[in-house]
Amino acid sequence: QVQLEESGGDSVELGGSLRLSCAASGMFSSINYMGWSRQAPGKQRELVASITSGGRTTYADSVKGRFTISRDDAKITVYLEMNSLKSEDTAVYYCNVNVHTGRTWRNYWGQGTQVTVSS
Picture: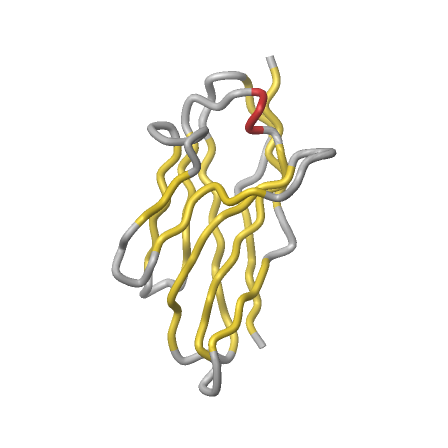
C-alpha cells in the first residue's frame, strides 16, 4: 500500500503563487511517474503536469509557463510550483504516482488539496 500526503493548497489572490507538495510513503520498490491533476466544480479531472523518473516533464497548455513540476527522489516528494494564478486555476488538486510494488506497476491518488484563486 502507498500513502500520498498532499499539502500546500490555500486561498490566494489573482496573480499569486502557491507550492503544492505530495510526499509518498509505503511499500514500493521504485517510482516511475509522478504528477498532478485537478478537478474544478462541474468539470472532469484533467492532467496538469507530470514528471518521469528521468525528469521529463509535461504540462497542460493552460499552465505552461506558469507552473513548474519537480521531484525530490530522496524525499519521495513531488512539487507543483504555481505562479501567476488565475481564477480558472481554482480546483481540487490531486497528486498521482505510478510505483512498482515489487510485483507490478500501480497508480495511486492522493485525497486532494483545494486551491482557490480569487480577485
